[in-house]
Length: 207
Image (cartoon, rainbow, N blue to C red; front, side):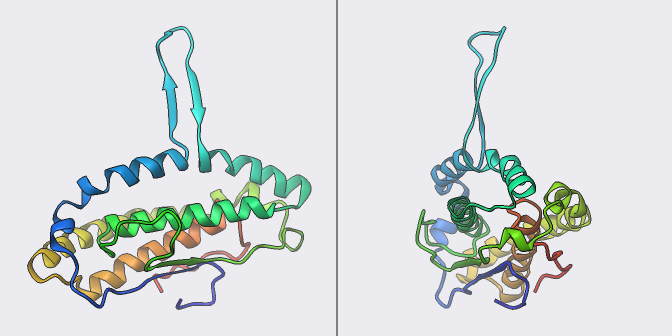
């Protein structure tokens, strides 16, 4: 954890050689956990057998954002169970992302922290600006723009790391720190704009 921002994120650098075989076939091996995560984070399942009507089911995390905004605006309340769901869903999502980014070769756990650490405090909703949740996603637009290009850079870094791990068994430290920094930045923006755990504007920083 490297800053005072409320949303803290870090990944332990592996001190052992990474598994080259699982790295080589990471996308294939990760398919089951990706499917599970997609169901939890709000994929839409549609039944199109009747062309006149479409029945949709929204599952999990995507369904909670708008109700949470309404709860904060009209009740100034952030239910604890809701907070725990968001925190643990984000932790799980980050473990899957770290696995796909080759930062860890252990298969993502649905509950154990493993090497991926995400922490943010339970917010006191009555001490927060009750109207900011309506516009935080809009205020974060500059971050989306920067993260788009950082994401491209992170993808290139992961590809380079893939070759490095296959030949040496090691994730180059500079590439590792960059990818973790991009994930850290993204988590801060998510915590501010969508999980709504802080009113403190995210810094434009990888550290």
